[in-house]
Image (cartoon, rainbow, N blue to C red; front, side):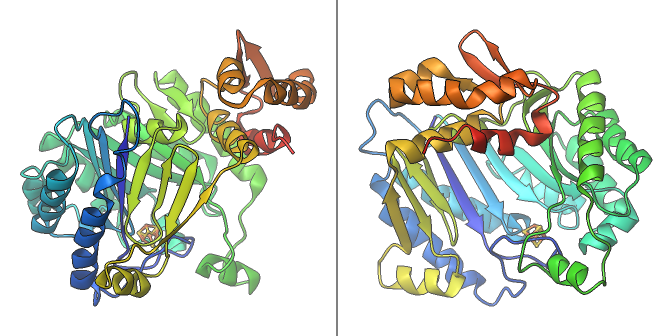
Length: 379
Ligand code: SF4
């Protein structure tokens, strides 16, 4: 199921933990939008060489903060995409949004666009967490944005949450989870707070100006989350993603199943067959390149070993795990022997299990899925 991702590189405020590409100045917004339309035109043939592929199934505008765009700008991007790519089979059009942008009026005007799914960056309902992370929105805005979105008929909602912040005790984390469950949100993405280098949070912790993050707390809160959401009927279909049956993210699923996708905008990545490409993570350079009619991207062709490792890293995070028949067909017998050999230790220690021909992380192994996946790598 081919998909398109668009990166909007603007935010109203810099969250302290964030290492995505964005700017808090909107000075380049108009030039960026012109460049984006040019990039769409230049990439018209991106999906053409793929055998048997039909229309685009999913469209995802992320960032950055795409909800900063006017609805007229979102519609303009969509119409240009529809002139260039076959969008008649589009099933899911997701817009990432922050609660402070989602006023009743904004939601009302978003209803008139083709957007049919909102991914709302709630992160937490607790004042202490929002302050620690330097989020712009308030608890009240978080609640109101969800209530209004539901009231206006946006039933395809996903909420982002963050756990493991130093000020959040287990009771507060349970309250955050229970609140989204009680509101009837059908899809939840939840991430442990990680401190990436070159972020403000990294600097603040290093200089003793912010409390450090604890792995033990994150592991405990991950377990709490699994219990609460699974008891509430959510499928834990990917390590960071939970959904009620039938409400999985189609766009994310295509990343995890190796479908082709085109990434547009600065820092966006694309994938097609064994070719991976990425745009420059610099908005000025992105605009300058497209003004000359050139794509601002580099690409590489993955070796079998790299493609196998990527498959293991993404597949092991899903509830379907690594399919040994797929590995046999796609990469060859050698890689099946490799994964069987490397998995032995984790099969014995109860972190992995075999179900038919699928190698899957057990509940005990889930929090450590990325580390386990790297143990299964070839090479
Ligand atoms: S709103 Fe999102 S992209 Fe922007 S700084 Fe915060 S976390 Fe990063």
